Every structure is written in C-alpha cells, then in structure tokens.
Amino acid sequence: MSFDFSAAFVYWPELLNGAINSIRIVALAVVIGFVLGMLLAIAHRSGNRLIRGVVHVYVEIFRTTPALLQLMYVYLVLPAVAGINLGPITAAWITLGLNTAAFFSEILKAGFQSVERTQYNAAFVLRLNKVDTFRFVVFPQLIRNIFPPTVALFITVIKYSSLAAGIGALELTRVAQLIAVQSFRLVEILTVVAIIYFVIAYPLAILARAYEARLRRGMY
Amino acid sequence: MKEDARKKPFVSLRGVHKRFGDLLVLRGVDLQVAQGEVVVLIGRSGSGKSTLLNCVALLEQIEAGTIEVDGAVVGAGPADETALAPKTRRREVAAEIGMVFQSFNLFPHLTVLQNITLAPRRVRGVSSRNAEILALELLDRVGLREKANEYPVKLSGGQQQRVAIARALAMNPKVMLFDEVTSALDPELVGEVLKVMRQLAEEGMTMLVVTHEMRFAREVADRVIFMDQGVIVEDSAPSRIFTNPSTDEAARFLRVLMDAEAVE
Image (tube, rainbow over all chains, first blue to last red; front, side):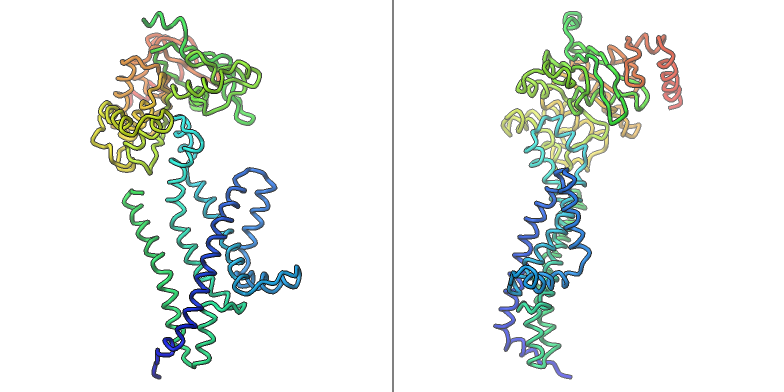
C-alpha cells in the first residue's frame, strides 16, 4: 500500500475552511462556557437553596449525558419542539458552550473551596476590604488552582468540537470525512487532520505542564 | 504609668455571649485589659479562649454584651446595637487590633515583603516605597530581613510565624492578639517566636495571648486568666495562679500542664 499525501494539499482550501469553522466553534463555546460557568458558580455561591438546586440540576444534566446527544438535542429536538432552527455550526457552539459552562462552574467551585477559610480570616484581621481581599488574596490563589483543570477543559472542548460532525457541521472532522471518502485517501487525510488537531491543542498542554512545573518549585 | 492607664481599660468586654448553633461557647465574659498589659488566657480546648480572641478581633459576631476597644464599642449583641460606635470609627479602631494565628496564614502567593506591605498599602494608603521601608524594619526586628523576597513555603514554621507577627505589626496595632501561635511549631522553633513576643511585651504592647506555654505566662504575663466552659473562672497575677490557684479546676489544669512541661 502506498501513501499519497498530496490529496491533503489538493483539498487544502476545504480543510482550511473546516479548521476555521472548528476554531469558531471552539472559541465561541469557550467564551460562552467561561462566562456562563462563572455566572453559574457565582449563583451557586449565593447560598439561595433554590438557585443552588437549579445550578446543580443544570450541571448534572450536562455532566451525565453524552455530548453528541446534547448536540443532536439542540440541533434536532429544538426545531421540532420549540420551532427554533439553528444551523449546525451555531447549534454546535451553543451546545458546547452550555456543556463547557457546566464543567467550568465545577472547576470554579472547587477552586473557591481550595482557598482556605483561614486566608479570609488573615485578610480580615488586616482589615482589607472585601474587594481587596478578593483581588489580592483570593483571586491569585484561585487562578493558580483552576489553571491546570481549565487548560484541560479547553483541550477537551477542542476535541469535543469534532462531535459537531455528527450533526453535519462542516468543521474539520466532517470536512475530512467527506474529502477522505471522495478522494479515497482515507489514511492520508485523517492523518493530516489528526496532526492539525494536535498542533492546535499541544501548545495548551505544554502551557499547562510548564505552569505545573513552576508550581512545584513553589512559585506562582 | 501603668497605674494611670489601668484606670481606663484599653480593651473591655462586658457580658459577652457567643454561640455556635446550639453550643454556647462564651457565657457572659467580663474582661478589662489596660494599655500595655499582657494578659495570658489559658484553659482546656473548648473552654472558649480562642473564640474570645476571635470576638475581640471582630471575626465573630457576638450574641450579647459589648466589646470596647480604645474607647469605641466595636462589637455588640443585637440588644446593644445602639451602643456601637459610628462605622468609620469602628473601622479605624479595627485597624488597631492585630492578630496572629496558630496556622500562620501567610498569603502563599506573595513574598514575605509583599505579605507585610499589602495591608499598609491598601488599608492605610502608605506608598509602596514607605511600606517597604517599614516592612524591612519589621523584618529586622524579627530577624528575617534576608528572607524578604522568599515565598512563605521556603520558610520554617517559626520563620513563617515571625513574618506573620511582622505583618500584623505593619498595621501599627495598639493591641495584639495571639491565638496559640506556637502550637503548630516544632519544639525547637517555639523559642524564636516567644522571643519576639517577649520583646513586644517589653516595648509596652497591649497583648492578649492564648497559649499553653506556661513559662511564657509565668515570665511575661501581667495577668493570667483561666477559662472554663465559656466563663472566666480565675483572673490572677501569674505568681499567684501558678502557686496558689483559687479554684480546683485551675489547679487541676495547671498540674497537668506543669507535669507535661516537666516531662519535656
């Protein structure tokens, strides 16, 4: 069997277009996920039992159902039930955004819990006000604690974005599938696409590892 | 001088009650501390001594009674709320109360210097430069100037605790609260922290100290207070409480502590 990677070059405009759509899905999903996740975490901290319950149900629904099914639900069920028609790419970033929010709110929740009560006490007896306590004492420690899992979540979103192929969104994986079938260059096309995903995600993995090494040396 | 000051207490607790859920931790505590006085609080764990310090530090809201510091009522139960000083005055006085904890509680993401300069800069509005000068002076006093740019994790427990003391002193407090500050330390590191506290006492700092260090109590305290089940049962000069305690509870507690110290 001989390989011919030229197919990947022949189809580069399609692949580029697919990659751009993937990045669009990821970028929007991450923005929605981080903003909504933050709101969910803040709502959860509000202490109101009803609000906490709603947040809890939201998080558990997204954590315990398959992301592909969530995509299908938004893309197929929403039009049927609510008459809301979304294009596959729009459906993809909205769904992944909602999904990411659930996971990010959990990361934030754990991050807040990891800043010990005694740190608040120390700030309090130094008479720092609430804003300064958050800004100078809590927030830097929170960032440190949530950074590694947040990067991991980011990488997960990149990988999950390929699930949008399942609802026909012309993102990188779907484009690759179509080209591969059309050109009969399955191995080459899928390999090139895997490399593209790797190239996008790997710098994030390096970043996370460098940060963790820094922490191990006792620095921030 | 001390006689003069004693006429008007610097810290004054009247009928202080504090509960955690169903548990009444403080059941009517009355305590006056004069300026420059060193008061050591002793008692079994759960006797309410640490809670008492937390109330004075305003970390806890009390259920009844009043807490007065430097002539201002800074803490009061709901029934005495009208006695509270105006908010700005309370904030002013709160900044005169410094506290050091058993677990040091340094900010791990900040260097020693940053730990000390944060509150003066943000609360007192001191310039960075002046805050640093002050911090280095304080580090000199606690013998840690060379550690100014280290992170807390690089320091021993004794060093961390001395930084915590310097951090509290940077706010220029008029009264210092010490909550079992040597209890988390390895025995060989206790001395260096006590030395700093002793020095502070000699300089005339008003101090409330919860500790199990009986030698410190004997040598440094002006008064030793024994607490049991949320009330003060004995309030005497150290010379008296250690030789001739007036209550059986105090006698029993002290005997156990002395025996432990003798073993060490």
